[in-house]
Amino acid sequence: AVPTYYFIVMMIICLGVGFARYLTGDLGTVVDPPAMEVLQQTQAVTVFLILKALANGTTSLTGVEAISNGITAFKEPRTATAGKTLILMSCIMGTLLLGFTFLSHQVMAVPSEAETVISQLGRTVFAGRGFMYIALITSTTVILMMAANTAFADFPRLSAIQARDGYLPRQLTYRGSRLVYSRGIASLALAASLLIVIFHASVTRLIPLYAIGVFLSFTLSQAGMAHRWWKSGHLKPDEELKEAGSTVRHDKNWIFKMVVNGFGAFCTAVVTVIFAVTKFKDGAWVMVIVTPTLVAFFFTIHRHYKSLAKELSLLNYVAPPRIARHRVVITVSGVHRGTLAALRYAQTLSDDITAVHVSIDPDEALKVQQKWETWGEGVRLVVIESQYRLFIEPLLQYIEEIAAKRRPNEIITVVVPQFMPRHWWTNLLHTQTAVSLRLALLFKKDIVVTDVPYQVD
Image (cartoon, rainbow, N blue to C red; front, side, top):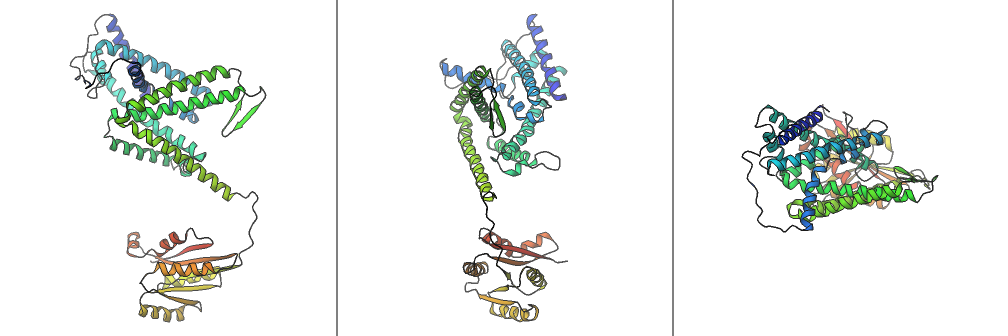
């Protein structure tokens, strides 16, 4: 809260001193203003140009969405507290915006990326770059840092709500060790970093993306509220309509509220369209393409979760009969301690065990057979000759052959010995047979792949 109050106080002081000097005729104009950026093409003052100026000006009003996104962080009663905060913030924002616009016009400030309008106004009002000017610029720096932090505070909450409703991956609903939605924060940081790199950190090019996203959300939320008031007006006074996440009740002022929200949706929709058209070449095309793509992606995720829930539901579910036969296949690349550990584990699962060795070298296969006769505890060993010196493919073919011949209610478990070296990086020196088999058999029905690790001290 301290940086926010600091910013508001400095802005009010700047406005107060500025208006006092204006009323006494001592305000003056900007000394050494930035170079005026001259447009290559002139445009007649038309309705479209006025609407374009309106759209550009409305970017200064963005930020109110942070309150709606962060309602869950307010004290109870949350709705009333958020409403009061929104009204207070709107009054402060409107006062500062109108005041700075008026004074900036009086001092003839020039919009430029080289120096902000507030900086030009500040050094004019405070007659140079003294202590008060430094304090003013510091307050804007701090509040911009707070503004950047707003997204990291609100987006994780919003994404968690969306994920809880099934429109984003469920992982976004999990809190980290610091009790915040760490995955949402990391996702936003990655997306923000990519945008900064792609658009070379140009505020002029990034503003249209931000504005289109904000005003599109304004339009959708206002239209949704208008539709909600319409449904409220068609309910009886004692009637309720249960919806996902809310309950609609009759409201006697539904017409007025519907008109207000409908008019708001119309205004913000106009701004959205104007931004999309006028800033299309400057980067707005990204949002025009990305937004529908993201919406389609969200609905795809939602359909997946609904389909999965339907498949996993126990409603009208008839339990299948118990497993009639459990066949265990243990892969044997060589007979060693890790292989014997896997064999002991396999014997706890079933007595129907088959050891399989893929022969690439006949001499090596003979050694495996000889050792297995000594250490195999009577378990049958099948040797598969690999004509093309392949390992995974012949093994998969053998498993698929026995799977095709299995009876109903029969399950197959593939046990893979895997020795674990002392250092993690030495795993790169060994074939990851278990990983390859798991990926190959993951979508095979009634086939289980089990790793049996053997730690090498």
